[in-house]
Image 1 (cartoon, rainbow, N blue to C red):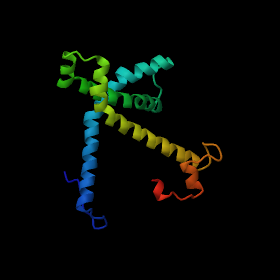
Image 2: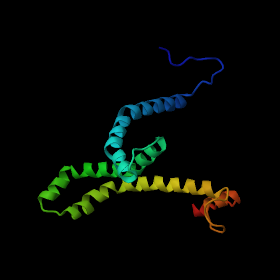
Image 3: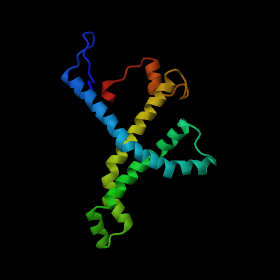
Image 4: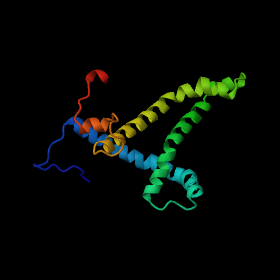
Length: 164
């Protein structure tokens, strides 16, 4: 089956654009094959029981399912990373020589998962910045007089390069 039909009115992608398009297709295929089944298991084992315990009913729609999945996503990532570190040989060796649990966490696990925690926190900070600026731009959100990024956009206050 021919996937790309070249028509004289279509733009011809450059090598880099075609490579980016192939990457996006491969990435979507990876997400559908590898991560979607794990998401179903995580939903059925963690998110749905927690939602039912909290609300006394099953999730009613896509929005409630999405909110439940997003609530547990960072914790699942950090837990998976920490579990992988705890299974390493050097952690087992530290246990065998008598290191306590808190010292293993402080000395081995926390330094190894700190970059992951930093990346997750950075993403959440970016989401908060976007939400704050989206609400402050039309005048909703922060009280009048508060210095916000959205207020600066609305009033067209230039951002100084030195402050970045």
